[in-house]
Image 1: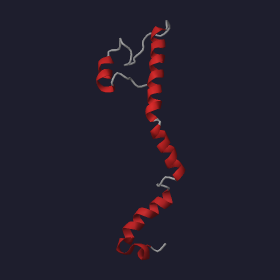
Image 2 (image 1 turned 45 degrees about the vertical axis):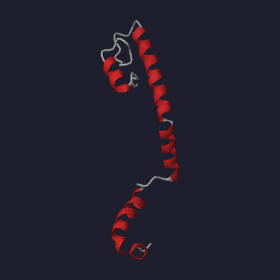
Image 3 (image 1 turned 90 degrees about the vertical axis):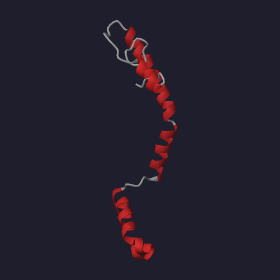
Image 4 (image 1 turned 90 degrees about the horizontal axis):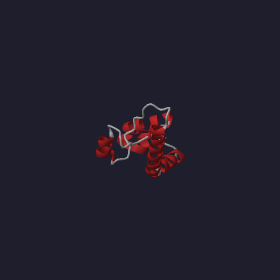
Length: 94
C-alpha cells in the first residue's frame, strides 16, 4: 500500500496508526473479539453463581469444627457485613 496515494495529506498519521497494529497484532482477530463479547454477555450470570458458591463455602467452613475463623463479608456475623450491604447490595464476592 502506498500511503500517500491512499491517504493524501494524512498519509503519515495513517501509517503511524496502521503499521504498528499490523506488526504487533494490537488489533483483535474476529474470533478473539467474539470470545470477549461472549464472555462479557455471560459475566453477570457467572458472577451471581460465583458469589452464591462462595457464600456456601463460607457457611460450610464457618460451621466446620476444624476451622478457626472465616472472614467473609456475606456471613451475618461478619464485621464487614454493613459495608457489604452498603457497597455491594449485600452480595459479597468470592
